[in-house]
Length: 309
Image (cartoon, rainbow, N blue to C red; front, top):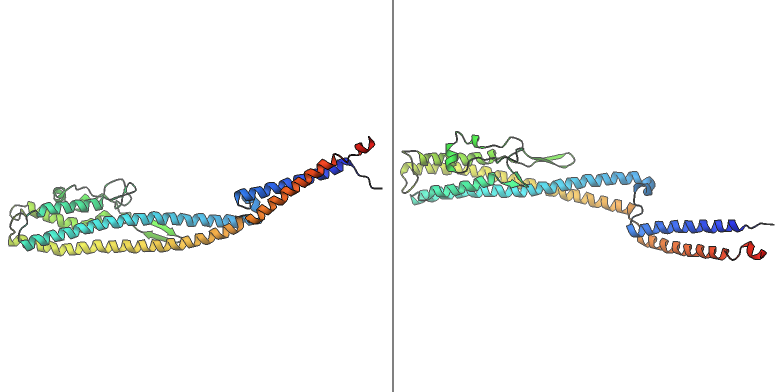
């Protein structure tokens, strides 16, 4: 004869209830977090693969962030160079106008304004640091405040404070781009020309450059126009280099974003919970909890003590 113990029945029913509650808690966590697990332990053997994928995601995101910073810097750099190039064109127009009109008029005043534009471009800031100062980003790369300071300096080179370190950025695995330029390589040619004009203007016998121009003065200004063509071409070449770098950074960023998107899908496929399955498991576990609770309630009425009484 098989003996049935009341304690054993209660114990079995309680174990069923606890298992149902555990399944319900697991399903509820998947529904609320929309993930199969909240830590690597919950993914078991896939944890190593997920760790490698997460590392790759972080590395690619770092390259994307770096590329965004480089792109912003190149945009500001292009604006600064454009300002310098416009000023060089302004100097060329001022000299050409004076020569064609055979009168200097307000030539030096106009050149002073163009110098200030060049100075502003060379001392352009980006995120609080001087753009063309090399590593010395806290020091303005150009000292001269006006044409008089420019002419008073022993040499044009003595006016520049930038060092020789150009900005370089690692935008991909094995790819480091030198994206920075220095103030002295951008401004030496045009500032030398302006310094020569200011010195000529201030020197007795040759200057001042005001009123009707002499033949000697027109010859001098014509020579500066030829030099300005070369100075302007040098700035335009650097602007073209900046544009090429910007396109290269954009292309690299597009590739990184595609890689990150693919990795996101792979990680999502392993970590995201199937919501239909999770909700179904939750409902089934809730039914199981109710059934186990009813069994325990009924066991109270089938105790052997009831029959003995």
